[in-house]
Amino acid sequence: MSKNEYLPRLIDEKVTKYLEAFGAVCIEGPKWCGKTETSLHHSKSVFYVGSPAGNFSNKKLAQMDPSLVLKGDTPRLIDEWQEVPSLWDAVRFASDKSKKKGQFILAGSSTPNRKGVVHSGAGRIARLRMRPMSLFEMGFSTGDVSLQGLFCNIYPSVLTGEIDLGKIIRHIVRGGWPGSLDIDDSLASLLPEQYLDAIITNDINRVDERKRDITKMQLLLRSLARNESTTVSNNTLKKDIKVNDDTDIHEDTISDYLSVFERLFLLDNQKPYGPHFRSSLRVKQAEKRHFSDPSLACALMGATEESLLGDMETLGFLFEALCERDLKIYAEANDAKLFHYQDYHDNEIDAVIEMKDGTWGAFEIELGAHQIDDAAVNLLRMKSLMESNPKAKPPKVVCVICGLSNAAYLREDGVYVVPITALTK
Image (cartoon, rainbow, N blue to C red; front, side, top):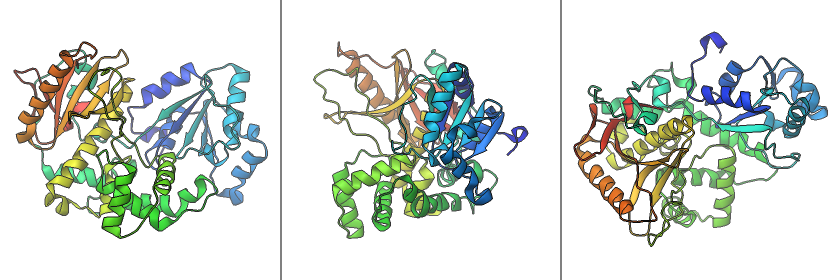
């Protein structure tokens, strides 16, 4: 993809800002999410570590003398740098020596082990996490409602039109992969299937030198798909595999495999929110399970548009995953963070967005418009609970993210309703 054909991403602004502040920027995330294209857009020269040309001569050159691959117009992109981890230290040293900003861009689809990496790069190399495309980046969201605007008390009333449930499902199954934008809907599910195949048969073996049971890894991935958008424990995953696949797997093995999946950016879990809730309400510290894109869960379960129309419960979890993928992208574009809330009194908030200044918003996610009232009641109950607690900070924003609402509007009770197809950063 040439720079003239580049499709803008929400992360672009942060890449530009970080290049002005740091010697190097590391853009990392799952395979095929667009890291190389975005990095090329911001660079003036490139070195492909993984190029097969000359019997992989680029990789051999980088291993022999990492400093040689850094020579070129800046910002210089080092693509798939993790193939030669010592490049990290070479970039850090070169950035430190030159004292100049915006010298290098590192792009990688896995996190290498620390072998061969001496320094953390703190203060020299800034990290940015890139994700598959949001609905707004793909053109399926109008962007009439800004997440940042909500925190500035801007609540536009906008008619967004009727939303076709089938179209939402197709975006869940298709995913946010740039490579599938021009593919027919009937073929779009092939990309996440091939993604998973590449991870299992190739990438996992390149993370480190350990041998792992591919069959058990596949069983764990399927269990994670069945438990998408939940806070199940590793022990529950173990039981789920035993019940559904009649296979025993040790919890230590599960922990090891999950670590590998995270290093490959296959998973993108939602951390728990709680620092401001220091009270008698004990906050659960479980992460909400997510793949980096809901299409991967669909591929693992063999879910299609037709099957999901007949399984509204599973569809609800996958729709939540879709929304939370987008909310994370929009939040991070505003230097904010996405969490979830769950305590031991069964109080829950689907999504919590905390801004840089500490203000936060509570978001419930519902597929159907008929679910908005109940979601609003829960949000107001949680808001009241926080207001009654002197140690807690109440939410500045209370909002229902909906799939099938035909309008964005502020309710009389102060709860804002916004279709996911109208939201942007």
